[in-house]
Image (cartoon, rainbow, N blue to C red; front, side, top):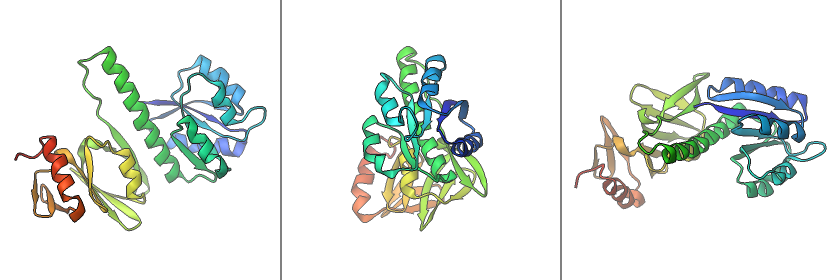
Length: 244
């Protein structure tokens, strides 16, 4: 699934930086670069836009004032030099709030979050139109070994936090990335994944057994927090992943 996105920023350097970031992410399709809100207002009426990378402090009309003027909006990720607008911005249910200078890792996290939200909404629309259609296979992108890696959610066995980085263990490889566990947790659907320990998230469908205080996935044995054991057993057995 591609996401049609637009960059809106009155600073040429900021527009160029965001453009370079967008080009690195496979699922983002850049359909416009605008210097102000009035330009993007015209573009929204002409194109099918899924996502705005929207600056707040701009001439004529600010990003927040622009959103107030719209009856329906694409998903929005604010890109701004001013952190004080964060609380006000989330009244508009924005996807994320990025404060300049924006690192690529932070940009990627926000883009993954937007992808998941847009995918869920499009899937719901599709199900309403075509009840028999099957759910589209989903994925996320992570930065590992100086490259962007596409990880299919169905391939993930579990995720392990190791201080300042995490390991994603899949069917075929182990990937290491400098992303906090809580950020990955936000991207993984709750119906498919469960956090069983402060350092571990497991794929529910891959769990084969619970042995003592460990979850068994193939040759892997993953520790369950003592305070999470009852909730873990309940969550897995309730969904008939484990046979009683």
